[in-house]
Amino acid sequence: MAIRQLSETLINQIAAGEVIERPASAAKELIENALDAGATRIEIATSGGGKALLRVSDNGSGMDAADLELAVRRHCTSKISETLEDIRTLGFRGEALPSIGSVARLSIASRRRDSAGGHEIAVAGGKIAHLRPAAANPGTIVEVRDLFFATPARLKFLKTEKAEAGAITEIVKRMAIAFPAVRFVLSGSDRTTLEFPATGDDHLGRMAQVLGKEFRDNAIALDAVREEIALTGFAGVPTFNRGNSAHQYAFVNGRPVQDKLILSAIRGAYAETIPSGRYPVAVLSITLDPALVDVNVHPAKSDVRFRDPGLVRGLIVGAIREALARDGSRAATTGASDMLRSFRPGFPPNSQRPQTAWSAETSSSRPYQPATGFGERPQASFDGLSMPTARAEPQFSPQPAAAEPNARYPLGAARAQIHANYIVAQTEDGLVIVDQHAAHERLVFEAMRKALHSKRLASQVLLIPEIVDIPEEDCDRLMQHAAELSELGLAIERFGPGAIAVRETPAMLGEVDAHGLIRQLADEIAEWDTASGLSAKLEYVAATMACHGSVRSGRRLRPEEMNALLREMEVTPGSGQCNHGRPTYIELKLSDIERLFGRS
Image 1 (spheres, helix red, strand yellow):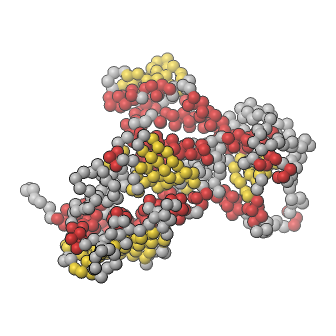
Image 2 (image 1 turned 45 degrees about the vertical axis):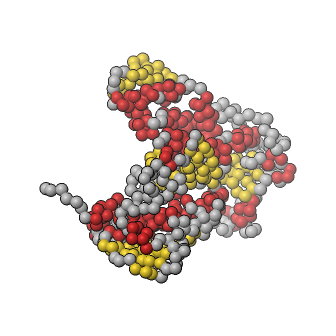
Image 3 (image 1 turned 180 degrees about the vertical axis):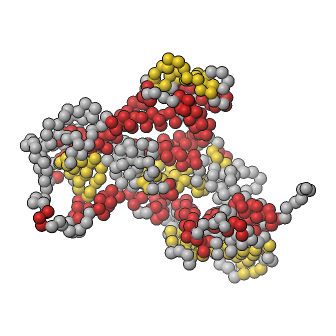
């Protein structure tokens, strides 16, 4: 069969298969064009989930007649010239508009600010109509109708109108977070109007618009620099988590991306702080020299490739962990709201009403004597692994905060232990309820993790070395990290061109599947060029040991033990959640308590 040149229309339809996968893809390309044109107001209207209609209007710089004629032709762009080494715009391929025009009915009306009138051009199924004058405000209006009418097979792969409309909403949210100085309005017959007013330089304010106002109260600021790469943004406290990763946003030089390396780094940063199946909320912005990142990896431009992926991953993990250590011990502000929602108004029948407003078990008559002075640590020490057994549960007498200086601590002064598991503490403006097992589990784990990084971990010498056969290139990568692995208690040597001899394994791991561990490390190093897998495995073991070595539920504590636990929590990173990600304490403000009793 002879080779022949494909028609321009067919070439554009092939390109559309990569660039325009669904209505949300078209919306993304058109919004990017508007932002590149300097728009400060962008309005998006849809119908039929974007399949029947997708209209994007902006007040950007606009185009003249000559620009419009070139805009609908492939590989015509104003954003790059001769090189891909310095891309500073969202779009640069020159494929979006001709690709859309080849599979839909496309019309573009545009006018420059310094022009007396505008022009309009239309493309339907790849056929370009003649350019004509048109009445238009400064800026551009792009209208896409009957998406994929020219390629009916693609329509069969689209989801329901509701799902496609939701995908467009997600695109608008990502763009809105990236550009807080731009006003976005999303409307249409298939949705309720969604508006994001411009917030200028208030990035957190825009994030609150998109992620909810609760994010502002539960976000920790990030600001870190490593070599030539800067990371800014906000990370949610671990207890402020969600059921999926849809609330994780990443931007590289202002470009919204869904990069696997970045998402993996976020998971790694929150390891041992969030329960399985839950996801943190985070907004990360990475800024670096455009020459250090390749955005020309995929036509959709949602994936990027960093020149030094290990550096980027290390920056993200380190910055988030440092922020959590600095400010991540607090519980989410939503905890009190969830507690309040669990209450029901009214009282039980008279026969079931408690006779007193406050009751506690009184098996001991020794009153609680608080420490004095704000910032002064209590005299009693708290050793979770060798704690003396409490003979009886103490009695507590509620006292006003003014008579109790210890209540000025962030987690207050212990007042009671209920059900032999929960510590009730009084603060200056409310009360705190602490899960003693979860809290001490975290304290023990952090102590063990600190020991992991302070010296070489103990190892056990294998009587007979384990020989692991792996590809030669994997052997090369592993041996490059042999010294790092040795610090973690794993001693390896080269055993021929395609094998590794394992001579020592970390003692903490006990009996190790050396073959599986080496292959897992080799795979990870090949992808990320790090050896963090073993470190994460050791921390998981440390978390398990901490769980079994902590204060158990049902353990009755003396007052000084409870207060010592509270003081340790206040100075321990990540103490707001246990190793499994569950909250270790809930705080109720006095205003919340008054709401329960109808006082406010």
